Image 1 (cartoon, rainbow, N blue to C red):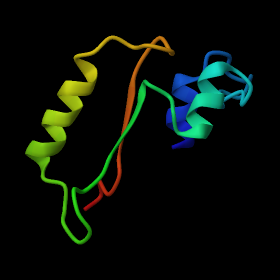
Image 2 (tube, one colour):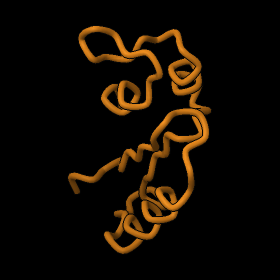
Image 3 (cartoon, helix red, strand yellow):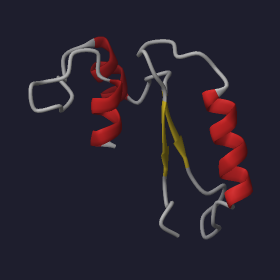
Length: 80
């Protein structure tokens, strides 16, 4: 999540991390960033199927970014 926040940050620090002060950083900390999407399994105990993840990611990236110059998706549980 920290990497994605830095990716969407409008004024990254010299070390490449998120600044924590810009509008994008504040929105991502509140969980309201319109360009940061988190995909998770639909219900407790179920895995997110690859076809479901693919459809959701395509839908997200089919839209133009709103706050940051780019969009990002975090797939929760991608390792499973």
